[in-house]
Amino acid sequence: MNRRLFPLLIALAAAGVPAAFLWAWLAEPAKWVVSGNQLYLTESNANGQFNVVAVFVLIGVLVSFVFGVLIERLARPHRWPTAVSVALMAVVAALICWQLGMLLGPPAPGSVSGLQSGDKVEAQLVVDAVSAFLAWPLGAVLGFTLSFYLGSDGLAEASAESEQVLPL
Image (cartoon, rainbow, N blue to C red; front, side, top):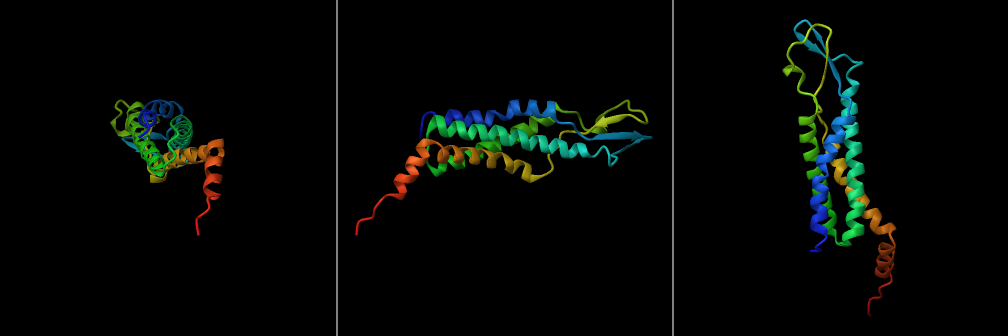
């Protein structure tokens, strides 16, 4: 295994921590409205849930894409297990970002005390779609693959493989 690959893969997984801070800062969660002793989510306030997931996906694709390119350019590990490792570490980064982002974001609306009728309470940062988690490894593998094939090394290796002649 390439000695530069392992630290870069760990850095990709650890990138979930700053991504969580960015997600908590940029996401605008849905707002629940207090009426009597009940919390209601109006249709106009519900679009915040889409915003939370969209920001999570956008951050994930960008972070993992950059790391995919960096891993390919710095470690030069041109084997298929590397692409699988990059994808797995991107999933780890997504899980770290998700869990830490939930801790950094607003608490569950039902746990907030001292609310009065008419108050608005932000929803928790929740990702409720599996596809949002799949965007992270997709971005990483896309960055890795594009860097390999669009870089000068990838073109040279691809053309050398296609020009090989088999003996008769």
